[in-house]
Image (cartoon, rainbow, N blue to C red; front, side, top):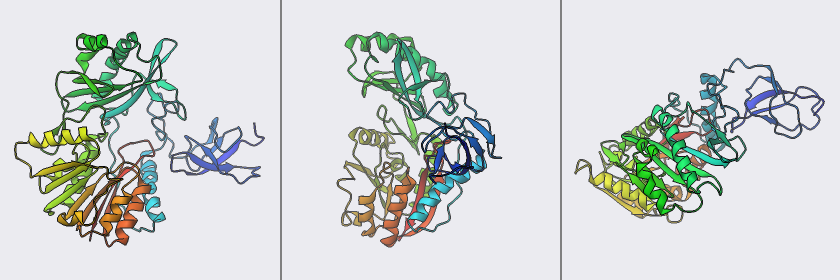
Length: 420
């Protein structure tokens, strides 16, 4: 233990850890990282190295509040439940502002969109066997160990209610040898009409297990069950609203985690591109944006996952002609972005890439004649880089809206609207 273990927290890092220095006896000048602390606090955090855990809050910040979840700190899901909402939202907005500033982009941000606790409709959970018993929940902080949970107040009520059924289903899987090697991953989705459950694990499911599932008690809680991407039980297709369309996403596929977030981000994009005759939706997934954009514009959608495109196509066809033409193609936009010449027929583009961003695609957009762009992002750093490319290519940044989809975490979405 170091002689002086009192640390004054100066600021929060981009991962939500407090960053500070010893109150006295600092001989290295090295910043110290102490999770679950706040700026202005003095904490006792003995130990060695740059990363510590606070053993005692000596002087608390006025922004410190009581966390609402019993699993907070042990669970790796949330990092910032101890921070009062105004300060938390200011910090979160600052993540995006700082990323833009690093790229030389000076644009006042729109007010951050924030959502009520208990609105998460999609959850990725982990289960592992420990001494013959299932541990089911989220990975611990900086650990591969699973923190067993009975409830998660971040989840919507429908997902909360499904957790006991998941445990029953895990017992069935365990009786058939699943979970002996490695962990089991469970993706739950609260669709409009019920709960979708996708399970993945090492190995394969025996035919006997698959035959037992429809009659098992747990099956009554789910619309659909998939094992390693294979649908083994379905009493009804899970569907999500995308404007006037109903889309059935593939098992375990990417879906915006909060329905209100998807609606808000889509509304910003649709309103911005409403007067565009033809729009390209790039990295389109199962059509959360494309199906809404097709209410006003002819849409061409591109995505690398065929199952997502199939879901998009089916949803569009089942609208019975209420939407404008919507075509699609399977395309790896990282390896083969739409070239400037290919973009000549489009006057609007929306894109929503993974965390790596859309650098290659933005370089082509910067050379194109596309009039309007809606850039949706889950990574402020790569968004700022991509916006820099587009601005250098002649686009004007109209607005940037931070969207707090993953509350109490450092993850932040944003929607940027640009025009030539």
